[in-house]
Length: 478
Image (cartoon, rainbow, N blue to C red; front, side, top):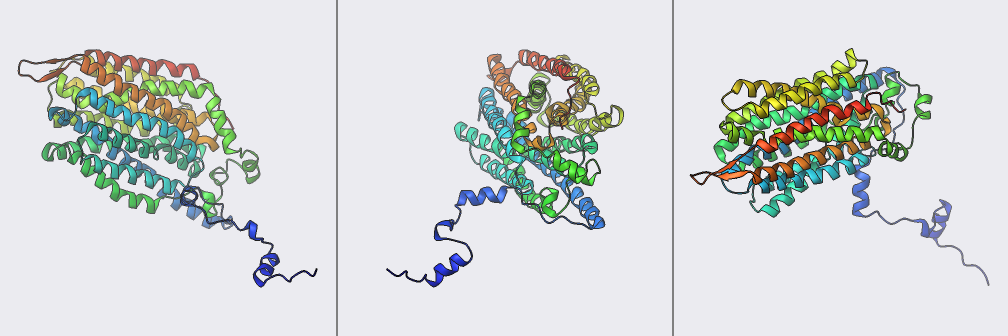
């Protein structure tokens, strides 16, 4: 029986080596979204040294400003809740225990999301991922200003926490992609000041807005501002250097040759697994958890503490707490500079020194009675400086220092998991202890006693001081 000649289309398929069975279907929506957020392929390497230097210089400035100011906006979005707690309590919208549970939902989703998205960040296009997180959390904040249902409020705040996890780990991944090891401590500290810039502005401007227009505007205003900031973040951020034909930063900085960099270029998954299994990372995680208990105790309940226990007005209490944020800018910026310049990039000694004053300032804030405003100003100044120096060290930098650069996101994710476990514990236990020790005054007003919860805050600072001593001589991995 004679064979029929192939059809025209079939002939063409065979000519180019493609069969009908090998033609893949168009990828689905989820696959296209996943591909959109993955880091791009390496471009053809540039060879002109002047062009490489020009692009590196321009892109590094843009990247650093984007991750710093962009992450500051992340905090403008998330910290407004701390300011509106007191007005919501006064209006009877929620009880202290309910507010604590709502806050714990945020930290629970943030804790899980920070670990999950930290592992993803080592493989993602940071430009797109960072912008999406700010947009998502900003839109949710606007929606929160429209509701007063406890369960809906908790769900929305939990979703906001998930989108907020698109921030920290991707920022540090980008920092490691564009800046060398010798620059890391100083620039990490400068980037970390974004927390304080965003939170400090929130305590001042959001408090004024809430005092004049009500608690709902405490969600609307920062939400709309965050949506607008998303556009600028997307326009000025960059993916990793190799996507634009630039060499890896270690090669650009002269730390490694191309051959040495290729030899040390471990698979991402293997590097990430080594992070999980390293005991020193776990110790630093528990240290950071203790530090975050005290940090978020002041950030979440400091305004309520000053209004209830020391009789300040809302705006005055917010102004005092804002001092800690602006002092924290100095702490975050200088702690990396101090360790790089005076301790040869080692963090253990300055971490111990900052830890001592961290304990003393928290105790001063909690135990000095009302009627001594000087103590509140001094304690918040020292607390702000030391807590953000320690959060810079314990909340990521010390772990990033000792782990592979290929697993920066995973390192930040693991530390973030521990850190926000501490923050979650603080919200739940803090709200519970306040509700358990409240009384009703003769005028029917609820009075909150901060004695027991204050002890809890101070004890946490002691653990944050002691635990880092166990990893004093931890070594850096290749």
